[in-house]
Length: 411
Image 1 (spheres, rainbow, N blue to C red):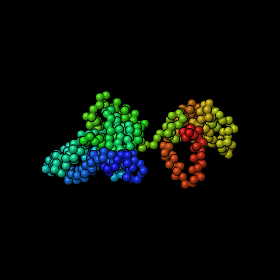
Image 2 (image 1 turned 45 degrees about the vertical axis):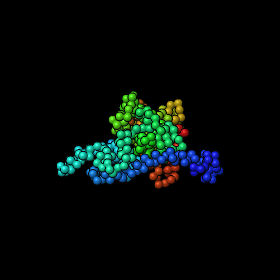
Image 3 (image 1 turned 120 degrees about the vertical axis):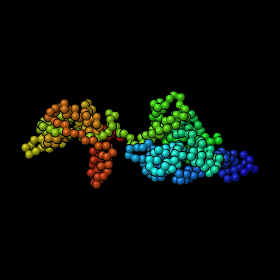
Image 4 (image 1 turned 90 degrees about the vertical axis):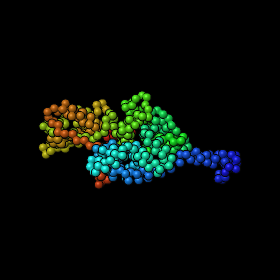
């Protein structure tokens, strides 16, 4: 390769000049050699650290650290084998940042065992380094020192260069750094943020221990608010360690928020939550309909009769009609009168409160409030999906789509 001139045809057969083809590729390979070297060092250390843990630490150490990584959630931490965080970020945190506290494991057992546990106080990587330095070469020792003194933060991706490197900005310290990355740079999206840490080793900057879930750009503002709330204006790296629990907890919150279904709102900005408000009537259905007729001001008495049914004495027994927004065609809810029962179906808790006030205004003591029943939009759709008859589902879906509020949401 050294005999090929820059302007000579490339030997790969592409028809391009060497300087326009494989010269740049070979230069990239050479420039990536230090990065690849440190990645190999990382790979060599993991089995050594895991072996050290299995030989010297209590059996429950890994599970206890897993719970601590998730900050001891009331409903328990996620299944270790069923989450991407286990290998991508937890193990690097466990080996290099987690601190073993002997008192939490020495409530019972012989005194000599307690003494052995006391000697394990601190980080796992530092314990391995101090006990068995001859098991580690100079590169592995340098990697441990760098990883042990580096803490997690939120890094925004400012630029991606040819899927080989990224320009990142630490949103907490304000510092910018260019990291050598290949796989992450290929998937990175400018503007997004990564919960990770950056090691600096012999001129190579590399991410080590990265959440598998990039933080979407519109959530960056929440990170800035977090910094302003917890941290001083002149933020230093030492504060990353001081606030490591708060930072990790906030990272969990951001990830959870990204996976939660979006909140659907009606045209008034209220969260959609189907709710039925029920009352007991102490008047006839006809009296109730006449009193509530102003809520359907656009409909005539003839319109209302189309949905009415009567008893054997030709007295009104049941009727249903829409609750209309004044001076508008928007439907606020559905009103149903059946015997001595009055039900109003609405799409938000706020609308349910309004319905109660309307009934109290128009019927007063003639309507006794019983209760309100709410269900999430997701559960309502799940119930529809479980319908055995597709035609019934189609009818309900069509009725739902005819609702003016639902149409406004879809549009």
